[in-house]
Image 1 (cartoon, rainbow, N blue to C red):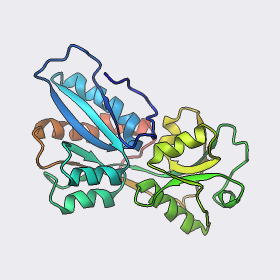
Image 2 (image 1 turned 90 degrees about the horizontal axis):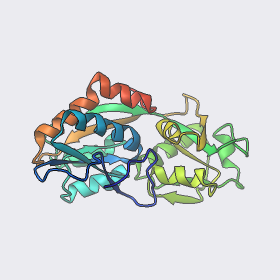
Image 3 (image 1 turned 180 degrees about the vertical axis):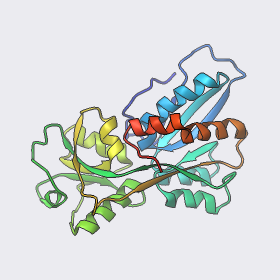
Image 4 (image 1 turned 180 degrees about the horizontal axis):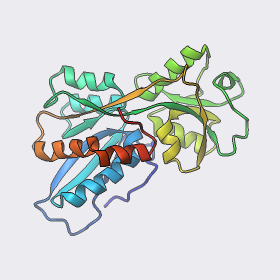
Length: 252
C-alpha cells in the first residue's frame, strides 16, 4: 500500500496513492479513481479518509498531476471516475467532448502567493523583487494552471521575468524552493499551508492576484456513478468545505 503524505512529490507527474491502509481488502471492494490537480493532494487525502469511513466497501485512489495532463488522459480514455481540475479551462476540454455525466461544479477556489526559502534569506517582499536577474525563479509551462495564473499575475503587476526552469506541476515549484535549488516561485496559498513551514509565503496584493476556480465532474462512462456522486457530494457538504478551508482553500 502506498503511504499517505501531506506534500506529494512533483518529480513524477502523476502519483497514485490510496486512502485505504488495510492489506486485507476484500476482492469485492470498489476502487474509485479520482484524477485530481496536484494542489488538491492534502485535502483530498483527508477527504478520502472521511469518505471511506462512511463507505467501507469503497477504496479511493488518486491520480495526481497537472490539470492539463489529467484532462488529456481523460480525453484519451483513462479509467477515471471523477476529475477535479485547478482551472475551468482544462475541465472545459473534457466537458466539450461530452465526457462528463453532468455539468461540472466549482467546489473550491484559491489564490496565489510568492514562496521563498524558510527565513526568506533574500528578503523578497514584492513581485517586483522577482525580476532581480540574480534570483532563481521557477514556474511551470503556461498550459499548467499555476503557470498560466503566474503569467497573469506578473502581467497585471507589469513585472517581466525569465524563469530559470519549468516544472511539471505546482509541487515541482514547491520542492525546488524548499530544497534551496530555487530562490522563489509563485504557488497557490493552499500549497504554503500544506508545506508545513518548509517554505515561507509572501502575500501578493489583491489588485494583482487572481481567483483560481476548481471544478469537479463525474466521468460519463464510470462504472461507479453512485460512489462518484457521493464523493463529490461530500466535498460540497459543510464538512467537506470545512476540510478544504482548513488547508487553505476558499469556498466558491
